[in-house]
Length: 137
Image 1 (cartoon, helix red, strand yellow):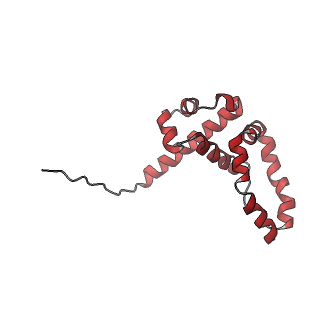
Image 2: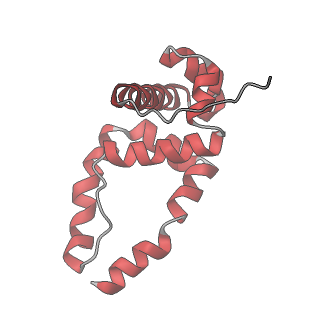
Image 3: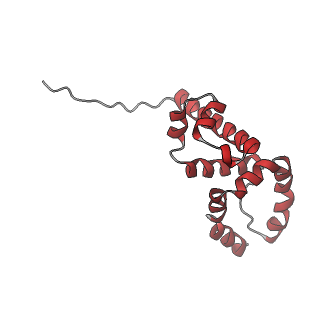
């Protein structure tokens, strides 16, 4: 007799919160490592150790180094309060005053992120959206 495999679709708000907290913990640890040691010692193993999770957990959340760096760039933008793209001339003029203090507070991390090829690719990924926002304003 064959046994049927039943997969239940169970959604747990607690599990979702735990998953989000683990992801945040990994990103925070990755940010600290990147800031302290740069990209040279930036590995999944070192991030796992710093965050207190297993290396395979880091890979579950971020399957590739590029995915991790892209998420770290997004995490960094939230940290410096980057906000939305500028859509008016006034917004464009005000933007540096809004975000530069965050760059100064996180200088080493900003340099490490912006100096990486992944960081550059992330920045260039939304150039057209930024241009469109400026043209629309």
